[in-house]
Image (cartoon, rainbow, N blue to C red):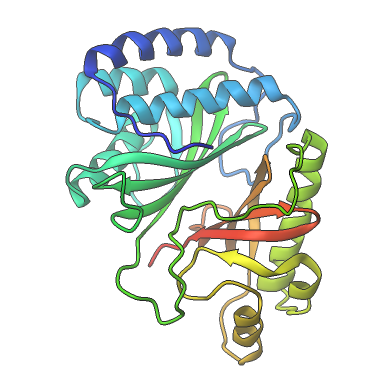
Length: 308
């Protein structure tokens, strides 16, 4: 997806946002899964029309509420797009529209003048995921915070919401990796057609299996079977390629096993959301990882790992 910055005037947003919301809420799908801490999508992952509607609703939400979440206008739009009893996962988070607007207000308090810049967006079944920058300067990907928000929608409204964010690392990384947390660097050796819905689902199962094999089972051999040896890494802790990962996992470093509990796929990118093995459904998410899959291999990786 192309970067998106909600740089619209209040008057323009009021007209366009209200009109768009009015149309899309009526047109929204009616077969989404119930609210709660479910970890899978219960609707058709191949209903492209419903997925496009859900993606438009989330883009509208970011464009019309982030800049001034305390305004009557933002509250009106959030009231249209967020169910009154929507679950916002996180300790002490308010439910309904207030939970989301409180998060946006906190983001802007933490980073004065911040804008929401969407870098990647996926819509799959009743889930929409957004990889975005909380940016003091939208032209600089090395400042502010990186975030991934996940939404579940039903009847044209958000009924469930998860959020992860971390500060963007500054300075020169010891790994030497200077890729930003958001850039798209992979270029296939030859032009390829966008994946079909069926291929997207195959990619999702493939990437989730690779993730669980590595981080739950700690089987390093998956790096040779599922990853491009020169894959592109957007976490500055490690350089590009699989060699550093092999060294890390072979070094004897101990860390809790974790596994993907929610996943979605859109285009050539698969998104996973992980918890510790044995965690309860309402326990916090540990990380969100994005994997670009092409030609049966993982070619590029981004993640957001909250400090807590």
